[in-house]
Each structure stands twice: as C-alpha cells, then as structure tokens.
Image (cartoon, rainbow, N blue to C red; front, side, top):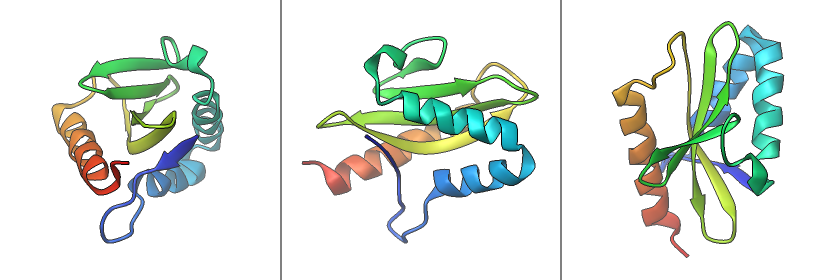
Length: 114
C-alpha cells in the first residue's frame, strides 16, 4: 500500500507535487503514477525503479526531460509512505531535499508509530 505524507496542518506535499506535474508534464506524471503502483510489489524496491538513500529513505526514479523523484520510506505492515517529490536535471538529489524528506519521515513516524 502506498500512501502520501500529510503535514500536521493537513496539506499533502506529494499530492501537490503530482498535481503540478500532471499539468506541466502529463507523460512524466503517468510514468511516476505507474511507478508508485509498482512499489506494491517488492521486486521493484531496487534499481532501476527505486534506490535506497540510506537511513530508511528510498527514491522512486523516473528519467525524462527532467529527472523526477518521489522520496519514500517503509512503515509497519508493508506500508509505503511517499514524503517528498522533486524534479531536477542532475543525477544527485540536493541535500535540502533529502533533509526535507527525512524531517517528514521522522514527523510521520512520531505521529503514526503503530
């Protein structure tokens, strides 16, 4: 099961990211949505679709005109929580984006630890 991180205020950053992507690049949007659906199957939890970033954080990767990534982590019960989405031209993920994803992951775990 894949779900999206929600802030304490009730906003959903990944859904907002995907909504913007749907308008700006429908083909990449469809590819990312397909990738998120594939994450339900553990065989896709490794490259080339997904890659571990360390400390429990992973990235879903889609290469297009811009590289599109959705950062996510596992929760108990085989749940996957998507916490951050980015697009960039390079192969590396900026440190500020990894920091944002880790903050959201830690926040989610504190609020919803089962």
